[in-house]
Length: 251
Image (cartoon, rainbow, N blue to C red; front, side):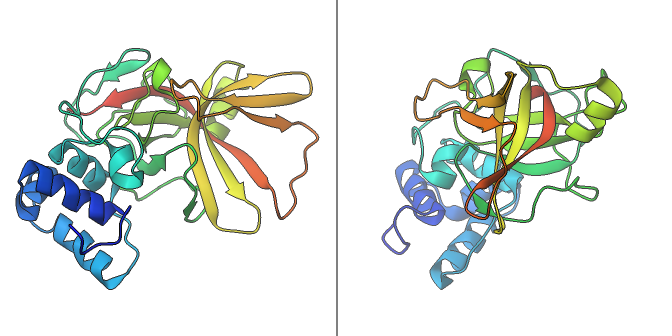
């Protein structure tokens, strides 16, 4: 386990393999149906190269290694979870159908800034195992894989798929977003390519709006944005990406 830098995904994978007495090939087979997923991660880690596994690979590895996506990717939360497919309350609904569904848009995770391109509708993306919500046929719909606990009190939990209607489409066809809705938000560092994509409850006030976590973890705090706010190069830009339609486990 000491061959990798500490506090990295590779070191955490190695730690779980050791504790579970599993081989990398066996865990990869459980996670992806192939033998090489963990080997590829380990090879890049040994070379000091950046790697960005697909979200479905990360989800599969978390299940195979009996842990959470948050712990596997960032070392946050509990390491050991015996039932990684446990149900949730709140707005949880079981995923239905076996045909690949809406486009996959990446991850939502509070506090995690990643050096990526700004969000664009994923025309040719892989498909998430979530079907579109038939209540909103005019809006393009996509799904993000949730990491962490910033919305766990309303049933949006680590490892679930968050289904959202693209904000521009929602506004065009279904009207303004109402206070109290759950939304997917992108927070970007001005002038840089680092973006945080997260789910929050939006609340509107006379001179501001607030993006509020609904979490059992007090580390997550509301983000307050004044309507007359003008971001400079050292500040953040806030963009609504989607209105949340549901959160789903894929079994």
